[in-house]
Length: 350
Image 1 (cartoon, rainbow, N blue to C red):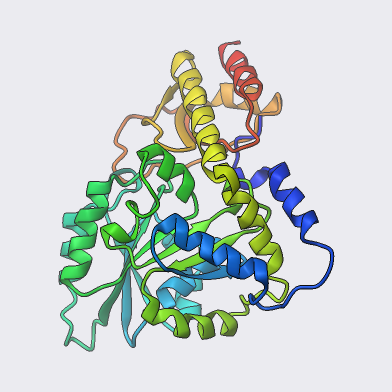
Image 2 (cartoon, one colour; image 1 turned 60 degrees about the horizontal axis):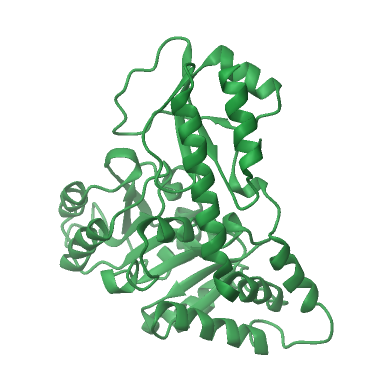
């Protein structure tokens, strides 16, 4: 009953097998091997256009380097006030970009509200050297609260970004979970809606360590190559990252495991809603579930081996939480089983 994070799960067996298969022999280092090139081509096929792909070690690196590629003196990037970028990157964006600032934008349950974005961007006149100047917009898909920006939402945010000539970045740490939730194609959820650069996460969805920056704006590719090296994110034996992505994409494994994780989240949500000691805080749209639970019940659940986290009330959540209750987050993964969820459901009812 490990619902703390999808990062707690191991790697999918097919990912592990691919790593073993590519372990023997020799391959050109630093991203120039045959499998590196093949995987880059596979990314282009998946996104239905030529893209530049940069493997990095972490989602933090992907997010921060994506913004750094567009930074300028006095640069300000706009993201949701509870985005991973602004709450969980330990100042990495400001540090590695050389001083860019993150400006929070409001929106209910993790989704950026377009009118709030426009209001935030419009505050900064481009010729006001004292305040700084807008340089990028970043949205999270799926969000930190398990919700998803709809395609129309992305369109609306993109229109504002383009109005102010700002590149649009998407933090896709749980990209596959959002994609299958919307039943969209990768192209439809990204560049066809104005996304210029994407943090493409595989680690949370069954990979061992596979994160990539997918660049649709090819004019930035040369600059990003140098930025990645300067940030110590250029793998020497990059074939092992490519091997993971090769297996991840083969036979649409990445979509299969994302659908499974989302289905387990829906099953878990039903159990939480059905129990007398808990209630859903809001409906999940991907593989994260949030619930209000009696604290005494929480103690019993954790004593029985369930792992999950306390959580803070997000912007836009106004429901009452009693004195003896708390808000908690549950995350499912490719490794979550129906048996795990059903055992948890039985404990909830006990």
